[in-house]
Length: 387
Image (cartoon, rainbow, N blue to C red):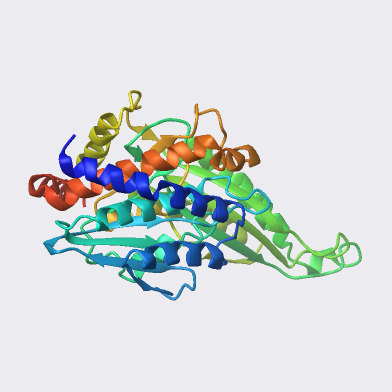
């Protein structure tokens, strides 16, 4: 290990207890998306104490922030992503209290080098569990001048290279005409009939798909059994491994909705009820640098690339800038995300050890990007070739 990385390790070790205290504070005070004021204040205060300039709010979100530290000579600009929202009634069952603090800790360690080139940013992104704050950050151009973006996520194994599914969240509103269900049913136009027909058409479509997932629920089906429903509403998640495939799938689902509405002489409208997520495009060159650093840190078991069946808003970031979203094992990897046991483990000795490893690996990889011109060229070349 180089002398500079030994120095970074010393800085991480010095900061480790403060980082753990912050992770526990955030973990014991869970906040839902766009309400993470305590978490943002906790992270921002740490960064301010170490010379970072804080901008908050950003991109029209009260709990989004950008913290900047300028190095001592020209160089790239890297971003470490912080998440900090919790799950309703469960708390930090996805370990966001560790994610946010790990990025902050790695950034602070990097800032201590008097030979630091370029700039180190920490970008705080709210509401990952709900509407995906990173989507807004991308749309508002926050990543426009960033060379590389990184974060880590607690999980059941060590895996640096992941892919995820593109996602569209669509709401369909079918409109008919109300009437007395017994005395005058022929005067009504049953919107619920159209909605049920729509589900049947989608079910047939799902069986024909080789690459795509359709999952829906009825959120409104009428107001009384004695009234022909004039309005029926459903919400669907559509997923596919690539955005271009999802675009084709969405057109097919929209046709199903239109045909179902036409069958009753009714109408249908649709809209997005959450942000659309793009697939995660992990930068292999950057992921390999992360793996090399994990091995230097003594991690023996690293899984091959994995394809996740979920969706992450980091996917949208990865479309505009080279990015990684690695998973690191929490304890022995038996904890199931989005559970109270996972949240509890993130506040245990397993969470404390994982926080140290994540800060070290992110700091080391950030240092590589900032100082290795050949690595950065490979990272950017790969990203450009896949765009």
